[in-house]
Length: 116
Image 1 (tube, rainbow, N blue to C red):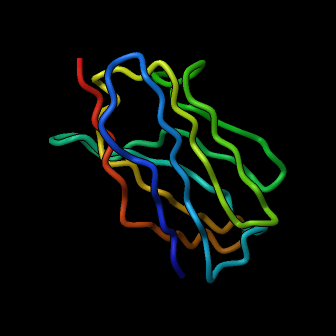
Image 2: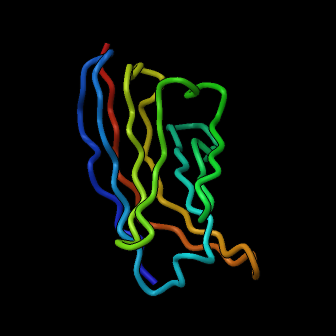
């Protein structure tokens, strides 16, 4: 199983980034795909999730600014992040959770840094 996240970087406040996650080794259709993040000294938190059918959920702190999407044919999941704030600075992780077995897989993470 591999979840390869990419697209992180350094951006000024108000800017945008698009994270991508390429999934392999899983039955993509059986998995809810999620983005988590972890800032230094903080617990890892759920940022956004999307089911196979496209039902989405977002943390209150990112609603209206972030959009999660998935391409089931390409086994990809994306996180479009707009109006970025310094408090969005964190390592962002791609997560897959099997809706039948509840087994989870994690990617290695990609760093997002938002400067003020």
